[in-house]
Every structure is written in structure tokens, then in C-alpha cells.
Image (cartoon, rainbow, N blue to C red; front, side, top):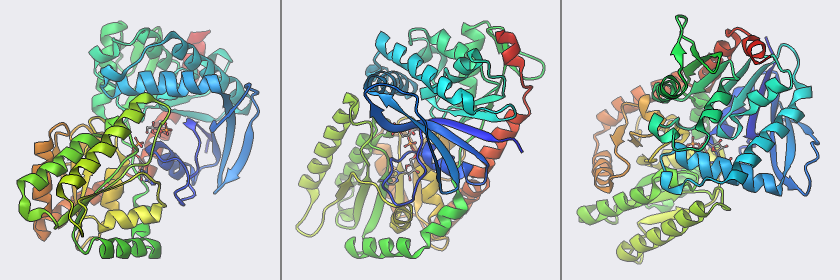
Length: 467
Ligand code: ADP
Ligand code: F6P
């Protein structure tokens, strides 16, 4: 078996204790690497005054990690800048929040070069190199310049936007051309894959060859859809662990067995939390009989706090939860419980299990693993109901959820009402189909599908055409 080198912006091996930064990528990669001999390379999350290229090698929970520190300027131009003020909002259809700044672009290229130069000596001839997410699109191009001839794959965890949208990005062609330094580029859904192909066919004179490769910029590229999953078996086990049971009991006592609706998201404007809060408010106003019978727990750990758009959404959610409670709360009942902290995985599993409904309503989301975790954590004899945005990649697989338009508080309120009154037999039927999918298309299936497809590409093609 080839050694696998995984590269992502952030490297976090979850201890499960809820102290580390959260996000779908970290959860999935830690699970994916567990049975593989290999290496996980990326940023340590720390900054130094001057970049020194020192690598910190560690072995944590069976995974070898190699991390580097970045400079303050890298953080503001690459991570907060090009990655999270330009690409993230644009790829999530928020052109209104997308900032273009030449220094972001330069910082992005510089950090990708730094990643390449530090990683280069660690790569051995037969290694498969698997690079993750929008922070590192140009990394293979930089590695090829340094003579790396290995097979290199890229997986995009977030959506690939519609053709017209990507053309609003200055130098969009260079960004797409950089993807042609890979042997395989993977997307979460066939829709994102098609949007990418459409761009290449229309903007870069691309063609699809007889063997299904996309050819443009003088190079061939294999693309594919590889929907990411969770470690469903482990998560289902976590949900019946003693710690999860304790959390469940505490929740049950505190909610006085009211029907709990739960949302769990990084505090990000792409997660549709404002419309969700408004949807819950609408439920209370339209259904006076449900007041005091329900409560909505929104868990939203803080994320990317230096970016203004994140500060703004935080302020709006603070105000909105306060307003709903001000309007509807009573001396012994608060309709909204809004918390910004991280939880251990087993506690989270207990929370999911105690909920009657999960609201997963992002305005756009590459996949959304919370939807899958909620399903895996349910009690098979009395499962909760998943309300899911049609714009989450997960909606492509989880058809038996109640699918909603996340921009419509009315639709969210209706789906909530339906979920809260759904007969047990229907809940069980829907849940079985959902769980079957979450179990079948789990994180191991995702990893194996991608790694096998990467191993099957013809190594060296790119190195040759770049020469
Ligand atoms: P994203 O990658 O955009 O953050 P996902 O839904 O795919 O979105 O992944 C989020 C991950 O972060 C999930 O594994 C979820 O359990 C985890 N997570 C979210 N909020 C918390 C929290 N408060 N405590 C612990 N883990 C959390
Ligand atoms: O899955 C999308 C993603 O951006 C990951 O790349 C990232 O690790 C996660 O969300 C959390 O974001 P951040 O690393 O910026 O805290």
C-alpha cells in the first residue's frame, strides 16, 4: 500500500474532548487517517514574527502530524484574506461579502509556496499526496515546480459555484489552471463537478476526452464526485456511551421533557442561522399551542472571529435570540437557548439523541456533517426528524429528510410543525433509510473511493507536460 500524505490548512487530531477547533474537514480527516500509514501536514494554528520553515513532527492518536507556523501577514492575507474573505463567501454565493485585494492574492500564493517548500523533502517517490480544500488550490502547481512527480489529488470540501459566479473573481482562470496540476480533483456532489466542467468547457476551451478526462491548459485531469461521510458506526456507539447518556439525562431534566429542536453549526453566515431563528419564531407565532411545549437549542461555536462578516452575524444572532426570548419567554420557560461553546463528541451525540428535530438549514454548504451525525446518533426505536436545506450537499444523499428552502422562515416553520407531529411509524421509516445511507457512504468509503481513484490515475502525466 502506498503511503498517504494528507495536506490541509489546519491540522487537528480531535481528542474528542471538545477543546479543539471544530469543522467537518478535521473530523473527517482524523477518521480517514486512523488506519493508514501516512502523514498529515499543515498549519499549526500558531503565528511567529518571521516565517522559519521549522516543522513540528508529532504522533497523536496513531496519526503522524507535521505542522508549520505562519507569520501574522500570512494569517491576515492568506487565511483571513484570500481564503475567508474572497473564496469562502464567493463559493457560498455571497458575492455581497466577497472582498478582492491584491495583497490577499499575494499572501495566498506565498503561503502555498511555503507549504510546498516545507513539504517537498517529506515526499517519497511512491507516496500519494492528497490536498484538501480552498486554502490550498495552487499547492500542486507549486510542488510540480519543485519537481514532484507523484500522483497528487485535490478534494474541495465546499461548493464549486456556478460558472457565471466564478467569472466574477479576478484572475479566475489562473485559479482554475492551478487545478490542472493535479491528477484528480474531487467534489462533494455531481452538481459541483458539473459546474466545474462547465467553467472549463466554456472559459478555457476545455474538452472531455474519450476516456472521460477533462483536457484544458494542455493537460489532462480526472474529476469526480466523492461525497464525504462520517464514522457512522463510531458515532452511533458514542450516542449510547455513558457520557452521552448522562448528557441526555441532563437535557431531559432541564427541558422538562419538552420537545427539543437542535441546531449545531460553526458560527458562520453560510449556515442560515438567522432565517432558522426566524423560522422558529414563526412557529411560535403561528402555533400558540406549541409555546411552552418546545424549545430550540442552537449550539454555535465561534469561528474566524477576525473577519468582520463573522462579527456581524454574531451580533445579529445575539440580538435575534434575545428578541425571541424577550417576546415569548415566561418565568419558567425560555424558547431559545443559544450557546457558543464546543462540546466533546460524546456529549454532542447525547444532545443529538435528546432532540426531536434537527434543523440543518445552511444557505449553501459543501456537504454538512452535522446532518449525518444527527442521523447516526438517533435511537432506532424513537428517532428524531431531520429538517435539511436543499442547498446542503447532504441533500443529494439524504432524500428522506424534510427538505426545505433555507431562505424561507415560513417553510422552516411548516417543516418544524410537521416534524414535531410526525407519527412514530413515519419517523422510523424515514430514519432507517437515512441511517442506511449514512452508514453505507461513510468516511471510510469516501477515503477509499478517492484514494483508489487517485492511485488509478496515470502518474507523471502532469510532470511531463509541465516540463
Ligand atoms: P463545517 O465544516 O462547515 O464546519 P460540517 O457540518 O461539515 O461544517 O462540520 C462541522 C463539524 O464540527 C461536525 O463534525 C460537528 O460535530 C463539529 N461541531 C460543530 N459544532 C461543535 C461544537 N459546539 N462542539 C464540538 N463539535 C462541533
Ligand atoms: O469544511 C470547510 C472548512 O473550511 C474546513 O476547511 C475547515 O477546516 C473548517 O471548515 C473550519 O474552518 P476553520 O479552519 O477556518 O476554522
